[in-house]
Amino acid sequence: MTGWLVASVGLVGDGTYFGWDGFTIQSGNLIVIVVMIILFVLALVLPFPGGKRRK
Amino acid sequence: MTAGATPGHGAPVDEADAHTLTGRVRRWLLRKLPPDKLLPEDQPVFVASWAYVFGMGAVASLLWIIVSGIVLGLNGPQWYHVSSLGSFVNSTHLWSVELFFIFMVVHLWLKFWMAAWRGGRVLTWITGVISFVVSIVAAFTGYLLQTNFDSQWIAFEAKDALNAVGVGAWFNVANVGQLFTWHVTLLPLAVGAMVVLHVLLVRVHGVAPPLEAAESDAQLRRDRPGPAEPPEPAEPRGDGR
Image 1: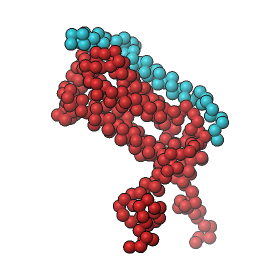
Image 2: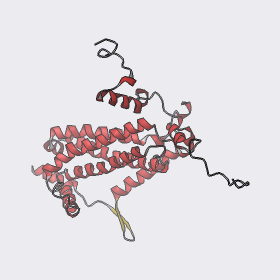
Image 3: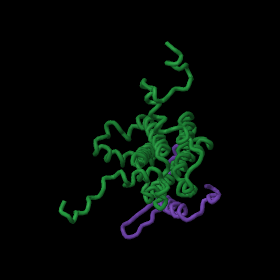
Image 4: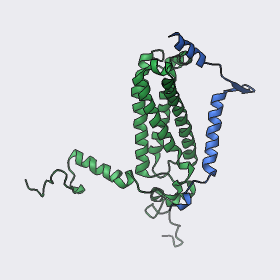
C-alpha cells in the first residue's frame, strides 16, 4: 500500500510550462498541438504510397 | 396457404412485397445501405491520400482503448498500479487515448477545410461532432479514475463548474464509484454507438470528395441546381404581353 502511494505521488509533477506575455501552456499540451499541426501539413503534402496505381 | 404466396424460410423475397414491420425495415435498410455500399470493393481515386487516413486511425485507436480498458477493468487497480505489466497496459490505455484525440482532431481539421458536410452529409458531420464531445467527457472521467493526487485535483477543480451548470447531483466527480460506472459502461457505449453511426453514415453517403473533385460525387451532382429547378424569371417581352 505504501509503495503504491509513493509511486502515485512520484507520478505527479509540476510539469514544464512555457509562457509569453500572459500566455502559458504546459509542455505536454504544446507538444500535442504541434504534433497535430505537423500531421495536418504532412497529410496535405506527402504523396500516398501506391496512390498512382489505383484507378 | 400456397408456397407461392408465402416464401419458405430462407427463400428469396421480392422486396416490393415487404408488408410486415421487419420486412419494411429490411427493405429500408437495403435501400439505404445495400451490401456493396456497406462493404465496398473500392473507393474513389481521391481517397488514396493521407488526408483520408485519420478517421480510420481514430477508429483503430478507439479499438485499442476498448481492448486495454477491458483488460484494466477485469484485473483491477491493484494490478495496474503495482505490477509492471499492469502499468504498461495502463500506459497503452492512456497513449491510445492521446492518439485517438490527435487523429480525431486532425481528421476534424481536414474535413472542415474540405467542407465535408456537402452533398447531404450534414448528419455525418453532426455525429462526428457528437462523438468528439462525448469522447471528451469519457476521457475526463478516465483522468478522474487515476486514483492519485492528479485525479483528486482535477475532480475538485471540476466539481464547481459542474455544480454551477446544475449537473453535479447526477454527475458527481467526487464519487469514484459513480465515475467508474460512467467510464466503463455508459460513456464507452455512447462513444461506440456514435462512432458506429458515423461510420455507417459515411458508408451510406460515401466519403466526401475534395473541393476540386466535387464533380465526381453523385450526391453533389444531384444537389446541384439543374433543369429540375424552377426557371429564372423570363425577360420582359418587348411586345407588352
